[in-house]
Image: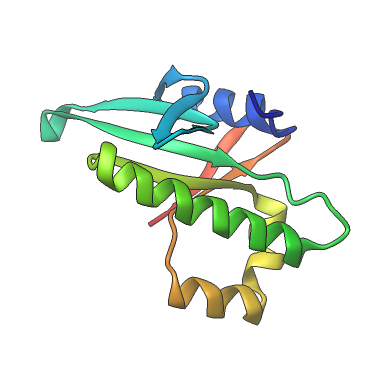
Amino acid sequence: MSARDIYHDTVKVALIKDGWMVTDDPFSLKAGKRDLQVDLGAEKLLIAERLNKKIAVEVKSFISPSPIRDFELALGQYLLYASILKQQYPRRILYLAVRDEIFFTFFQEEVVKIALQAQPINILVFDALQQEVVQWIP
């Protein structure tokens, strides 16, 4: 089992506060001989649409001295998990969870914007202190 991100439990609480039921902690994937783990799996009943929305959430802290390196690793991991989820769980949407501080500073830099234009990803922005979801993108 891989090490949990320092904001793992924070994001879990934020999801629950936002009306999600955490169903998997972690959400396990298998590709060939490899076992992989997305940090969290969750579901939410959407009454108006009469269906369950299912997500998987990969939590990233961005606390190393190099936010570029953190972004490279997070993006690579996101793309790998998204590819496997698309094959095995096509209805489950993958999100990358990042702190609001990181999203409203580093994620606004040109280098990140260029990468995300070329390879759009779903982002869950959370407030680490309040343990709440701030924004879902898209």
